[in-house]
Length: 212
Image 1 (cartoon, rainbow, N blue to C red):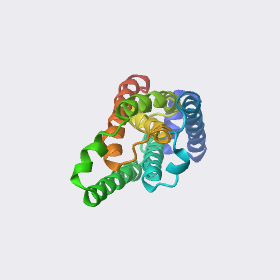
Image 2 (image 1 turned 135 degrees about the vertical axis):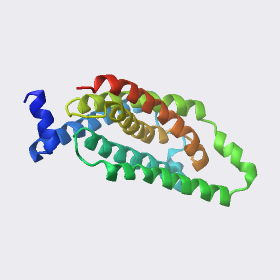
Image 3 (image 1 turned 30 degrees about the vertical axis):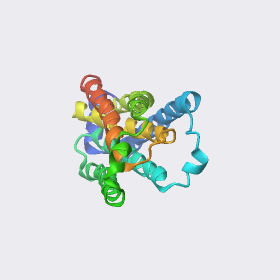
Image 4 (image 1 turned 90 degrees about the horizontal axis):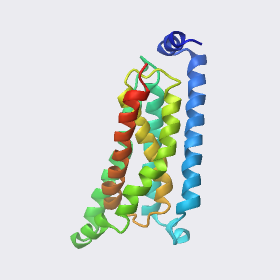
């Protein structure tokens, strides 16, 4: 299929073309997760108290945030790759992890003494968070950008940024299993900073590599 034909097919959102791209994107997500997971298990690993941590609601809540972020961003990537396809629903879905995390922070502030707020926010793993999430996101981002090149995104910078968001969601899911800071204040501060780095990187690369 020539480029012009592919673009026209994506514009009309033909079922066969949509299915083909969705398979490409699914493969990219799976491969990216495999790359990030391999790096995690070979070089990082679970936190020492993982057996006890899995019984903790704050620990498990981190995965609710990271997985909902990854899922909604991947869904938005799929829409951005097809010209003329509505993106509003998946855009709204991106607000879900932010709202959930904001509610968790509010609950923490209401239920814990103010003297504990600063230690919870600073934690003990901020440096690792800012390093390991971007590191683990490199593979998924590369895979997602290659997948998006098989589509026809009309907003290359935005598409690259959302790919960075999706890649960071995948990376943060793995990193959360290593991080011993479970407080919502910590997660709401350092995880978004680490994710923002990859969003900027995705935007910069996507602006160039996703043009057509």
